[in-house]
Amino acid sequence: MNNQGKSGLGRVIIGKYGNLIGLIVLIVLTTILTNGMFFTQRNLINVLRQVSVNGILAVGMTLVIITGGIDLSVGSVVALTGVIAALLQPQGTAAAIVLTLLAGAAIGGCNGFFVTKFRIPSFIITLGMMTIARGLALVFSKGEAISGLNDSFSAISESYISPSISLTVFGFLALLIVFLFVKERKSSGYERKIFTFNFIGVMSVLFIAAAVAVLVWLIGFRGMPAGVAVFLGIAFLGAYTLNQTRFGRYVYAIGGNEEASRLSGINVKLVKFLVFLIMGVLAAVSGMVLAARLNSGVPTSGVMFELDAIASVVIGGTSLSGGYGSVGGSIIGAFIIGTLNNGMQLLHIDPFYQEIAKGVIIIGAVLMDRKKK
Image (cartoon, rainbow, N blue to C red; front, side):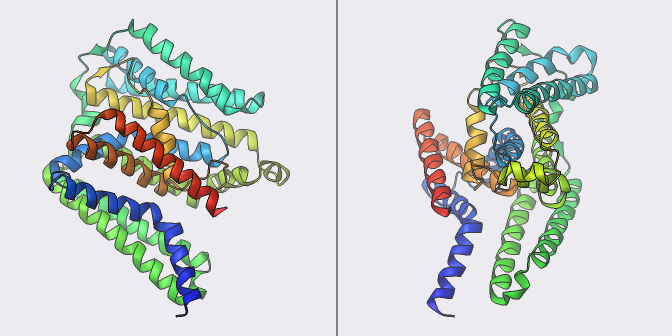
């Protein structure tokens, strides 16, 4: 293969797998610097627990940003829905979950209504909702944490799914992911470029196999934490929705060119409204997972969660100008943020430097996005 071909292949690999390669390098470096403390079953389960809350938000934020919007209210909605779930505990766990999801849907729907009906920039609407939701969380809780949640509710995050069931479910999902990947590659015309198709296909399968192997190893610890299972399930559904459904195609089309999408017959207002509604529901799920993990509804929780979610999406390769991105990339971005935070904690680095590091990474990711264009 000539140098030009190698250069083109290199650009394809970096373009598609740059963030994943960065995550692997970060994991290796963190493991070395912590003398192996990072890459242990107990610590990696802890990382998964931490990432699950941000990862759920990142799935919804991916949809919002691909359409060209932004949602700054999710951190406050996490706090508010956590408080709502805690207050509704006397009504039973099932009722608390359903009503909390409806509350999240109402908040997301409110954001979507004002954005689509009055054409107000999502930045402004969600900034206002961020303040409103935080204030409501403090009002409903009277400024205090609501503790003593039911064991059945705490099980949302703290219980473990047995290793046998976990292995069966994730084995099935792994096979399904490989099937969908092969189907997508065949339909995208990569079979015409035999070497590139084979190389990238083999790399993708190896990455998936490695991820499954690590999951199997972790599941052997005690099983899969329920909160992590919720996160992975939502991530799979989000990726499937974007890549395999008409709604997902509409999301990409609107982000690419909203006016052209409208002229082609897409109900732009409805799609954008649904995107913000989904974001509200996922923020409620994240709020319940966090409340279950803390065993309390904390009105001051969720601070800066919106920035972590946005950072995960940007690091994952989603364009802030809309029209391009993936749930898989955002999940990798969430793991980069989680690995960075956990590694710094293990190294006893001042937490303030974590924010500096995340800021540098975000700026770097945005610069790379600009360079691609």
